Every structure is written in structure tokens, then in C-alpha cells.
Amino acid sequence: MRQTLIILGVMCTIGCFLGYCAALIDIVQDVKTGVYKNNFQEAVLEVSCFSLYTFLAFRFLRNKIPLV
Image 1: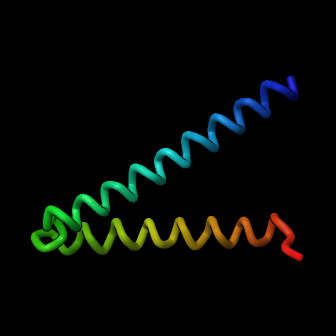
Image 2: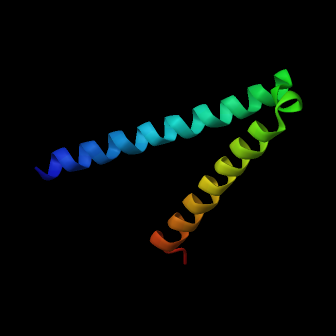
């Protein structure tokens, strides 16, 4: 049972990381193709959500991983 939870946790972590990378790639491609010039609202929403997620992830890691 414990091994199943560990494997599930690792798989979920990898899945979330892949989603994070896909979102970053999408933002870079949208900047290169000029999508954000035509749709400013999409730019604000995507970049703010991505930035908020990154900030919360670093805050979580800082609280959970003690740095000496």
C-alpha cells in the first residue's frame, strides 16, 4: 500500500511538472507568434496565473525544505 502511494505521488509530480513545462512552452510560443499583441487579456491571464503558480511553488518548497 505504501509503495503504491509513493509511486502515485511520483507520477502525479511528474505529470504536474510536464503540465508546467507545457504552459511555459505555450507562453513562449505565443510571444514568438504575436498572439499577445492581438489578445492582451489572454496575455495578462496566462502570465499572471503562471507567475502566481511559480511563486506559490517556491514558497511551498521554501517552507517544506529546510535550507541551512
